[in-house]
Amino acid sequence: MKIKRYYQYLLILLFTIILILPIGLSSNVILFTPDRNILNTQDEYIDITVSEAWDLLSDTSNGIQLPIDVRTDSEWVSGRIDTPFPEFPRHFEKNDIVDEESYQEFLDLYDGSDIIVYCKSGGRSAASANIITSRGFNGTVYNMLGGITDWNTQGLPAKSGNNKPSIPDTPEGPSVCNIGVPYEFTTQTTDPDDDPIRYGWDFNGDDYVDKWTDYGPASTQVSIEYGFVSTGSFEVSVLAEDLVGSQTTFSEKITVIANTPPSKPIIDGPSQGEAGTSYEYELVSTDNQESEISYFIEWGDGSTDGWTRTLPSGESLLISHTWDEKNNYVIRAKARDEHQGESEWATLEVQMPQTHAYPWLTGLFDQHPYLKQIILSFF
Ligand SMILES: [Ca+2]
Ligand SMILES: [Ca+2]
Ligand SMILES: [Ca+2]
Image: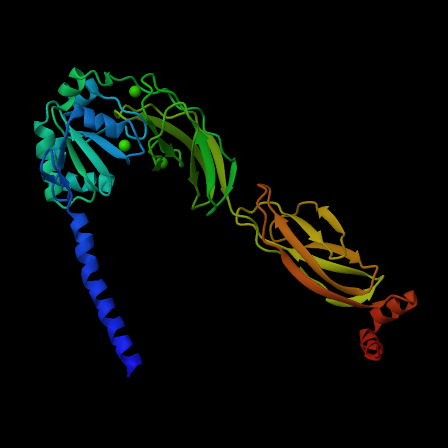
């Protein structure tokens, strides 16, 4: 009975803790900013001064905030705030935030981020912040009071006008790729304004960007991974775009062959025999690009013949080998096409249970294979 009561107390204690815990937590959830009396929740935005914005944007240890300029295109190009990477300014016009269709684009870019909207003097940014928060944005929304006008008055860093980045360096990357495998391509460029840059890659020579990198600092080597999905010969080039949206033309092109390696070879030949006797094996593989094929064979006894001469796709290679010691061996063979695409390894197990003691027997056995079976059965 005593033990039962002990458990009852324990249960009551547990329930009490479970009941009290959320009350304790919820008292921390509602945060007040006493000086401005604004609730810090996701359906309200927070007004901040330009120097508060600068403190947030010049320091990544207080989190990453993305400044978003909501003024018109021409205002944005003529001048903008200058904050260090990765908290550099982006442009998304207020009218495109109001429009429900283009607002989806805004969400694709910024939902889940903490953002600081700004405009010329704070009117359009407040309206934008209001719309963003009313539409269920994930992340904290700050509105920069006084806009870029206050920012400039306070002497905070800004940039005016814009110059195009330089055409990116000719891409560096492999000249042959096996399809379905990602390969790395790299380039870099400079920007006269030292703006953050993103790179648009064209992987099929049609002068349309197939893949963009994220924005990164200028004058830094940037790589991208790409795997070709079909075979053929492709021209690869790259362009650069700075944060203002100014684009270069495409770089010089490099040619990449997208290849498939030959099929895993078929090894055909005896799987039993005797040491000291030479046996002949037939190897065959095919290649989708009808490439000439070379073979590499390991005989399982530590010896190899290296890469063989090349043969047309689908044509058999005849090659023979003698194992000196009686043992079980695994023959391994792979095929390679003229683009250095290598197949998987094929294997064949061979048993050499007998030493070749009487050479004259070989000739006899060749003529009468059943004799060999009979004699071997005695051992
Ligand atoms: Ca920050
Ligand atoms: Ca620029
Ligand atoms: Ca393209």
